[in-house]
Length: 361
Image (cartoon, rainbow, N blue to C red; front, side, top):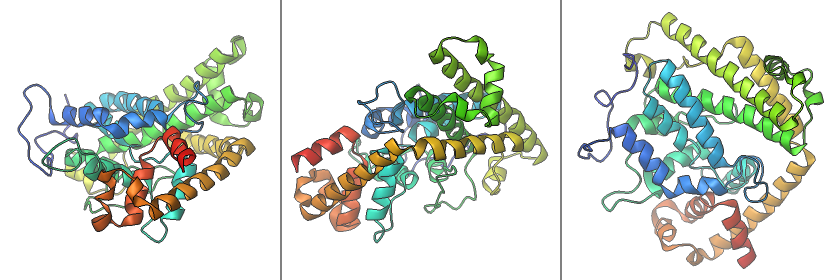
């Protein structure tokens, strides 16, 4: 049974285009299914998380990251009496707008679009579900429920700052806030594991990182001889600890805030799905370590310079020859502008398709 402040179909603002109820699926189940079946979701399989998909098959892609976020999100939502399916839908859609080549690609596209309102992948995710996907004859987009779209518009992390996009609420639902924390926990713990697997960082470098040392103690890592098992169990211990602490701390925050209804959530700018201050600090310490030693590793920085050249060349070519884009994207040019249509097309590409186009031109 859901808590009184959880999102339900009865209190949701519904869809932009009204639809008849489905005979055996709830509205939020339909949202989740529409996201899973859309082309943008499938293309996440070929988009970089940190390492290029297809070249580094052991590492996470944008799709596997998304699935892991959804699993963590559902665990938290269930424990707090929230709408599990809505949480899952937001988690599954949170990276639909991500560009090829990870955050390097996003940075390059934002620079290329600096005179045309820029590019930010959370805003693009909302654009994907509201406009760019087109599986229905009567309207553009997926026609998702208001609360799902609000969760995407308010998705935030240390790297992602929501811009609002016309939603009047100060905050998203607790389900959307769960997606924020689930994303934070997932990418830090899994990037840690992938960095160790790749050999770009070593366990010895993490001797002063509190959350890593605590995880190794939890799994008695010194007794695990297999390096693969050791790093996997350690990363999972980070997740297990943070998820448990998030659940307990969020229960406390919700109780102290005397939250009773969904509107109580929407009217508060402060998030109530949180980690304890100590754990948040320790997670930030890990994130700073990964930024300095993993994301900014010379081999990854070298790849980022290539991405700048690749996307710059492709963007310039498509702006000069827009007729080489699919007709669907050409149709956006009169209303959205040439550069935005080109940006939409590139942002939806997988890494492999982008490189294939570069070879052709």
